[in-house]
Amino acid sequence: MEKKSFKARYNEEDRYYDNKGYSSVDYNYTGPFLPDVNKMAAPMICVPGQRLCPDNEKVTAGRGTYSRNGFVYSSLAGYLQTAHSEDGKNIIEVIRDGDENVVPSVDAIVTARITNVSPRFCKCSIIKVGKTDLKDSFRGMIRREDVRATEKDKVEMAKSFRPGDIVMARVISLGDSQSYLLSTAENELGVVIATSEAGVTMVPVSWCKMKCPKTRLEEHRKVAKVQARFIEYSGSGP
Amino acid sequence: MPADSRRINGPEKSISPYAFSKPCKDIKITEPSLQRKDGRNPDNIRPIFLKTGLITQAQGSAYIEQDGTKVICSVYGPRAVIRKEEFSMQGQLTCDFKFTTFSCHNRRQYQQDAEEKDFSVQLLEALEPAVLLHKFPKAQVNIMVTVLQNDGSVLAASVTCASVALADAGIEMYDLVIGSSARISGATILMDPCATEEYSDKDSAHVNNGSVTVGLMPSLNQISAVTSKGELEFEHLNKAMKHCVSMCVDLYPVCQQALAVAMETRINADPKT
Image 1: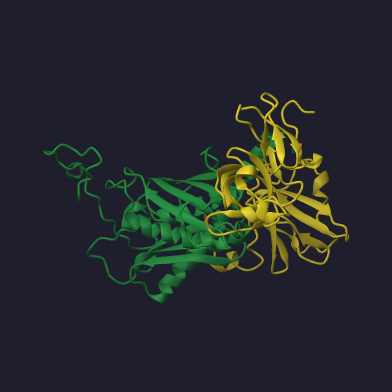
Image 2: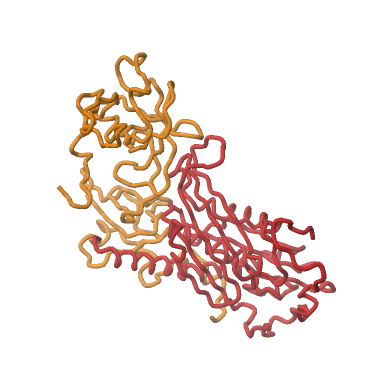
């Protein structure tokens, strides 16, 4: 490496490397927007800090990007994707397939496994946020008053959840430092999978009861009215 | 040194292996025109090897090799905070820096010593400004840095390695942080010093004898961390920092390319995209 004069190296124009096209799109570009990357054969790979395009009224910085000093930069190592929003803007996103880092956020629907039931609340571990599996579970808590929307004071925790149940719930607050606060106070939320004392997966019979197909015994649960859009078929398919 | 009762210690009658090792010669850093011990010019940096994804169990990882300096870094998270800590709307970054016992000239202990703790903090301070912490409230990201072999400029290599590992893990960042270091000896500035160059001999001058490590976010043109050792005059420090910055800018494409190569293989391996 030959010695380079420092000044020439480090002025504003010189800073942006065009290293085999990874570094930046021409930032003097003022046209409608980037080439239509979705149609390109190979997706354009981005790395954090990579300048993508000027930030003007025609573009919106979407997921995996941020805008700063009038430009949109990538904040993820992934590939570029553009979409058109309803108001005619280009949404620029940097995507990592199936490898997004998600954390539960307020109002998100999460899937959790009940770990501990007490008369006032039950604890659970969040295993899924939306449709994304979590690599590490987060702790969650459902308080007695958040189990259902009506007759809140008549709720009995032991008749709503049992350890091992799989529950769909909504995050109502980030809670304290220990756990997220979850709620099942909607018809669509509650227990979706539960096993009976005989160890068989039960079938729901009403909003508050599930039945064991083997022993025909009914057990109390806060049953969710499962919606088709939440069902994902894995493996053998429908 | 206090004996560690939990580990197997050597026999009572033993001789330190250092008695047999050649004394580490103090180098004399003199004229700038002179070639260094390993044949480099003062401005030259060592060849770099950088690769991501070596540790498959981790969310992201990176390995950097600068000739004799070998650092491996793994990133875990964002995951739930394990220890009981105060609630924060911002995500937390933790950093764990460790020399392996065999990495340095003198054997290191298993427990983190003061220097390693100091490096952990400096590394954390270099990386924190680059990470979009508000994207993972209440969660934390753990960075584990292990030095496999220490041949100088360890902190600089660790900063580069850790930021690439973070990007590989899919943690959102404003920019990569690139580390670089320089050794100042009088008017001479040695870029990317190796271990023998990092320490001055006892008789050398007290003033302007030290080292500088810089962490730069090249795309944002911001310095995220600076640390210097020794008593340095402003002009020398300034000059060394400028050299470090230009070295970081030179290293930037290397890191970008390492990440891009990793992404490309990931996309090719995954046919659904």
